[in-house]
Length: 114
Image (tube, rainbow, N blue to C red; front, side, top):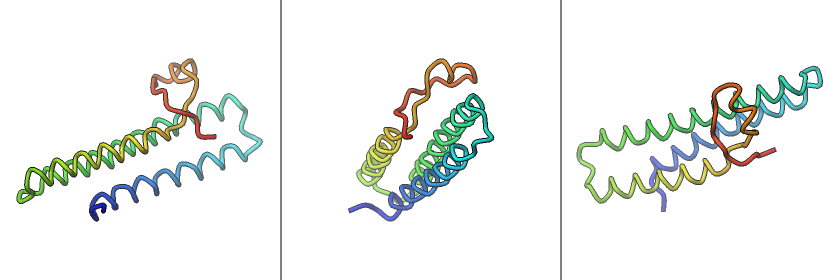
């Protein structure tokens, strides 16, 4: 059974992911956007999505750290759960070509979701 805090974190990640998917759909559905601009927009979205997920997990870790009466065993379980959640969500990250990513200073190599 998941804790309410972990469920909230996962729910936040799902909500963020959905928002980014909607933006991707809008970009892909607009034929007036040239292919090279479309790719650049997707690369930027990839970076922003990754940063948003990192922030959500960082905030959750901070909340765990700021809970003074949390026993160490519960704290360890919470960190493991967050680690598992992060692995699950990061494995679904989109992948762009390394060349295109390097043009704007990105180097992540996650799988493409389109």
